[in-house]
Structures are given as structure tokens and as C-alpha cells.
Image (cartoon, rainbow, N blue to C red; front, side, top):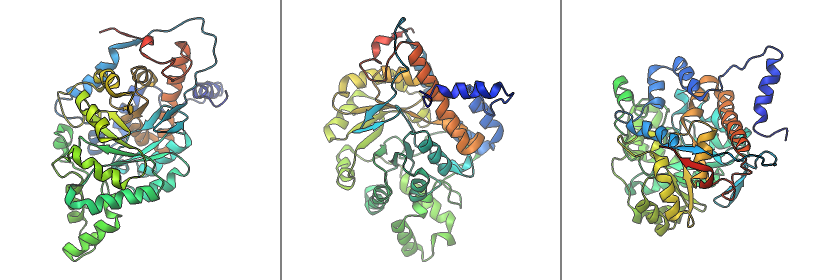
Length: 399
């Protein structure tokens, strides 16, 4: 199994024999501090920041510590199979890259670098509507890689814009639509407020490129203002930001509009209660992401892992349950999968990798997490990520 994820460590040790040490740490905590040293205060505070006193972010991490893996011994087996089938398609690994916007504030290559790394490591890439790179350019960078599109959903009076975004994503080969439910307005983020920094309001393309590259938005802006976007980028950025963060939520009854304009699976991201998970089943979507946006939107919230088991028990046999929020390492992935998630989204760690070394940094983070997962399961006597082998029987609640 020369290409198995755990062999990444073998490469590093072989280089060590030639006195070649890795350029990037393998400790996930170091990724954050290394990125902080390289980024501006604005950029670092944006990705690190969370809502309020960061209690939701802390609760996300504490939730993982409440579950411990129980290994089995004398299990004669090869390294585990990490293949999984999600939303009707087989993937090599049970992780995907969470949608993160404005990536060019972390590295000049932004989403292009991240998408290339995802494709190279056979990990699905989820493009954010808040991207600083167009739908089409990210698709080109992704090549044959699996790619999903995450929608910040404009209000109903801008349905023409929503349809345009969805059509562009379909034409560019994005297979799954991920609809974020908890970010119709930006949360109270002290770290951004302290810097007076909102990347969506500046007279550049950072965070608003999907709008600036959209033919419908461009036409409507020109008709309204009598100038091209490039002639008044400040006004255009503010107008687009207000369109994707309108300050009010859509309703369950409006999901049908998306179903009428999207041909593939639809996944609702931001589910934190059994009641909402059941509504997702009722409206007929194919999946949900149990997520609190990494603690960035609402303070005082429950850790996502704390609600995952009850949501899986309630609806896991009727739609796909994915997981996001607080994931930092392979053992975190293993615990979320054991509690019933079909796929786990990686967020901040890859953004830190992007800040550190662009595409190479993202690849390093992905390979590290996958190698950690591979070894964690193998050393625990777990033969695959299938629920047959990786389930609650291998966990003990310890706190």
C-alpha cells in the first residue's frame, strides 16, 4: 500500500535520514500559530475569529474530548479502507474541504491553490459563494477533482441571481449543492470588529468575485447605476454583500425553489437540532451538515459533536448526515464518523495551511489528517470507515 495515507510519515522519516526536515509542522496547533505569524492582523483575525466570547468554538473542541476510542487487539488486518459512499458517489476518503471564503486574504493563489490541493489528494472541494475566485476558475484549477458548490442564498427578489449562480455551478461540474442556513447575516465577531475589518465591503474582488463575474449581477448593476462594476467597485461590493448576507432567512417552504433549479443532491448546512433535521427530511433534501459554522456565527451554542448522535438516530436512515465544526486531526474525524457522520468537513486547518505555503501547505494539512486517521483506525483494530466497523461500539463517553 505504497500510496496509503499513513506512508506520508515514511516519506518524512526517509528525508530525515538525509538531514532534510519538514518545512511545516505536523502538530495541528502549530498550523494556527505559524499562520498567525505570517498573516496580517486583519486576515488572521478573520479566519481565527469566532462569535462573542468564543464559547461555541470552545464547546466544539470540548465535545471531542468527551469521547474516547477503545482499541481492539490481535486484529489481523491490512490498513483500513477509507473509501466511503456519500450522496450516491464513492470517494477515496471520508473528508471534504469545508467552504471558506475570501481565501486570497490568506495567500495570493487563494481558492485556486486550495482546489488544486484537494484534487491532488482526492478530497472533495466545496466552493464558497464568498470566494475570491470565480466558479469557473476554481473548476479549471480542480480539473477532474470532485467539487461541490456552497450557496449563500440571495433573497427571493433576487431569484434571477440565484438561478444564475446555480446554472454556472452546474455547467462547471459542481455535483452537490450545499446551502448554508446560518449566515444570512455575519455574526458578532469581536476580532473583526476590533480591526474594523469586513472583507466583503472593500473596493476589490475579495469575497465578491462570484458576483463580479456573474452576468446577471453585472447587467443589473449597470442598469441600476449606469456604470460598469469596475467603475464603482466599492458600491458593487456593498451591493453584492447585501445580496448574499441580506439580514433575513429563507423559510423551509422555499427549499422547493432550489430543488427546481438544481439537478443533483442538495445538502443543508447548519443543522443543530433534531427538529430541523426532521424538517430537512420532510422537504426532501438528500443531506444535512451538522454544523455551527465553527463557532463563527452564534456564541453560547452547543458543540456540534454533542448533537450529532441524536440527529443521526433521528434521521440518519433517511438522508446523509455530514459533520463540520471543531475538527483538527484524524482522531476527530474518527470520532465523528463513529458517531454516525458519513463525511467530515475540514475547515480552519486547511486555511492555515494555505497561509503557510499555498497549495503545498493545503496538501500537507490534508495528507497529515488522512495519515493520522489511517493510523488511528489501524492501531485501534478498526478495519474500515464503514459503519460495520466504525461505530459507537468503539467509543466510550468519558466526561
